[in-house]
Length: 254
Image (cartoon, rainbow, N blue to C red; front, side, top):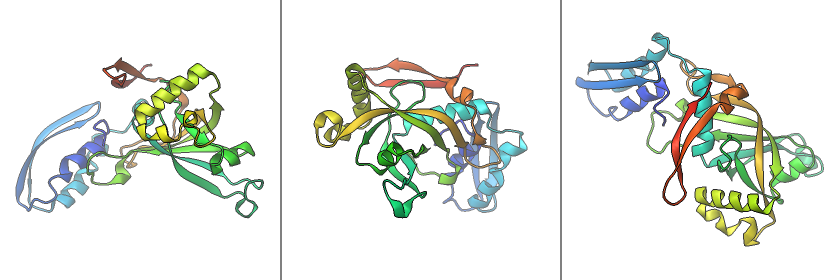
């Protein structure tokens, strides 16, 4: 869970103490990015869960709310760090008449290979999403945070829908570059990449046109359509480390 969203910092800070029995004294430092930093000691004479519920509203009391700039940074980070998404389409009558108009979504791998926020995908021609798209369906990618450690509530984590279209990558050099990048993120995909000859698949770029961002709890997180300039202007300071892996941070460039 990311430390740059105030409510998440609070829930993360108290999660580990929920097993303590009152009274218990905690000395905590809460960082409510980017404006507030609090240091205080609390003596709990009621349950930690009740304490957590009370303090979950603290950022709102302080006047903290996730800005569009912060939401853009989190959105870009989701594309960079989350390798899983749901690729969704709408059943077309040419593909399945009985399900015409119904939504369809399945998990897929993504990789951030271009540095502009548009994820790269490997799509097989037998996939329902591809077949629906080939007959006129729109496409949506749904991405959510997958915390690396136990968290108080997954509902507090960011998620978003990316609306757009796919563009096939056709040049041999670009195919090779995307393949290398994709395998860095998903080594197991070596079994079914196009050069493996197992399935008929191609590399695509998902060109994002609109974003619906759901940052977490509504009292502190931004919820709604995210203007594209806040997504595009959140840029990554990249450092290439040994093995070709990228490291760095994402910041907002006005």
